[in-house]
Image (tube, rainbow, N blue to C red; front, side):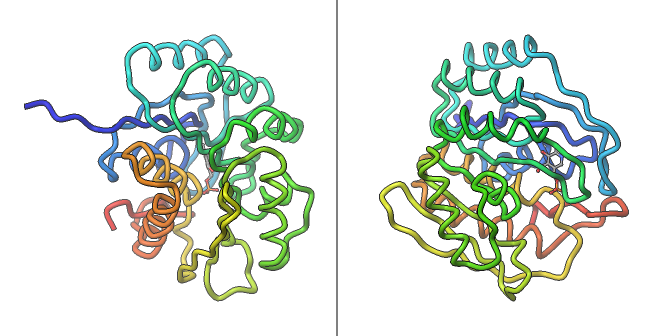
Length: 264
Ligand code: PLP
């Protein structure tokens, strides 16, 4: 008998190396028993050592991917990752307003760990204007939270202030990922929910270079859980546990910042 699976959508860039971007999203959704569909907005020539080149797809084919998915699938949650530039951000926002894909998780991807820019500087204003108000949840790391809010984040107090600012900018719920706070022995993330309640998520910090695609993975896991009907708070907790396990166990692929272990 045919089995039904919840369906989720990732709007992202392709990582040819398979560790981050759309590939990490789809692998995560698959592991969470959710059927993943994808709108590719950019293609990167990339491996675990870095990003060699990137190409952004024309607007028409991005629009057509949205149309094709909306025409046939029953998407229950959506996330976005690498969006490349201002035009793409506008195209994505237009399509998110046009179609109902359920709760939208915005991972405001800006710079890859190797230093490659995955979003142009001028597109940050477009993300704030067009995407933050659509987001059920925004999931910045500390550098991204700093760029979006203009707040310098050196401690957990500043993480809270930045999360509040992101809510005033339009995001309903906020997850500020604290992995870049190197004064901490744990990796503590701060969550501020739409009803004003908040909590910290703490996980162990591992000495590893297998961290390629961590941001993509946690936001894809949260989207997958939401597609299943999991409540947001539990979905965020599951996302944190999932990414912690995938970092802890690593896998031997490539020679640089290795990918995560989705079988962990
Ligand atoms: N490449 C693509 C296409 C991505 O979407 C992302 C996501 O953040 C990255 C690379 C970043 O990878 P890393 O975790 O190494 O910063």
